Image (cartoon, rainbow, N blue to C red; front, side, top):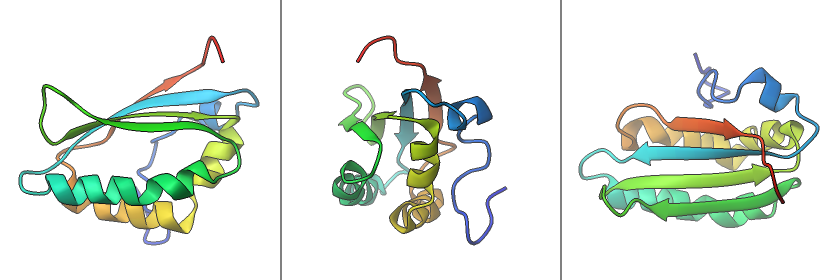
Length: 118
């Protein structure tokens, strides 16, 4: 369970991903609660410049799902697992994760990936 100081959902990132010394990626999916679609979109847009300025950032893309209004697909790629760990502890990410329970229907979906190519 998350603590007041740490709003990142427990178990979001597997231990082997966090320990990786090579690039790692994640495909994620979130569905906005009814009536919260624009608020979630605004929150997502607000963090993009900060994410892209982080150490270890390689790619961060967010898309609207064409067949599911109010659903967002994410793709992130980081240089190492340590970079992801540092990313998740950034103050702006703590605010982001703290806001999600009011905006997202159900849990975030995350599929962690080992990139085969650059």
